[in-house]
Image 1 (cartoon, rainbow, N blue to C red):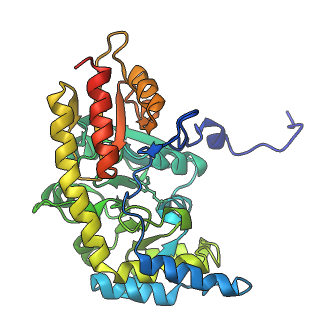
Image 2 (cartoon, helix red, strand yellow):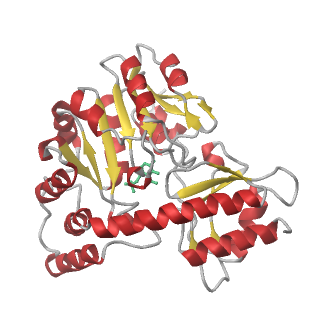
Length: 365
Ligand SMILES: Cc1ncc(COP(=O)(O)O)c(C=O)c1O
């Protein structure tokens, strides 16, 4: 039968559109947005100044290859700038990778509570998302490897993962890579890498440097505090960079983002302050919320996953409503198959203390 109107490819209509975290609490004077893993310290003042400077010549197209930014990233991490490509957020890069490496009938693996952009990007290409179960809210290498078939073209691993905050130690990441056939692209999404303080963690640079089928994506939205500008980058083998450069928008990264990104990556003191703040308050929140009798999944990122009981009046949904009335906006994570949990970003000291106090009140403690 001939369609009476244009039809998107079938996979598109299987997508549940991404719903970002709420940012408002109606009727509350002071709102603490703890729903999107933004940094409570904001960006480097140098990044704000660089952004503002670009405002005086908005008529100019940006440098389409973001050369200065790629060089600044290269200097910061000791990487070859030719093996870096920048994107409008790492979301852009994850979607470009899916577009370049997936087609109808292919499969891409991600884990049960993995970042939602993976199935969205996969379905958009006509490929099928394959879900590998996790253990203790953590990606499991054997479960992923068991699901590799001749149709598998991409494996997405968020390390650390959002919304669980858990990570896969480097030895395990290497074992996963070793088990993959060479034609499978292994995408390591290290959006929260800067926050991790574990000796057995590595963001993925070494694996990318020494293999032809591994890429690592990074973002300026988290520790650098530039989420509004939409800026991410990817490090990969030359042939993957070449493929992405062919399909990305010619000016996919805007000029204010390039300028602010350079200033941010060079301000290591600001990054260190943000990391220190996070380390301190992540530990505090995990402990204090745990003391209230709620289970908190051990996190190495800038947020915690809090599990609620299923009894009436005590559920995650009830807690969300209670907290919102106090201006505390957390993230419902039902879409991540976690209907009984809320994700809370590490906030300012004020927000963190208020959240723990409010949770205690909610539980009648
Ligand atoms: C695991 C993970 N990857 C990627 C992103 C995308 O970040 P952005 O597109 O802002 O760079 C996020 C944002 O929440 C994330 O949690």
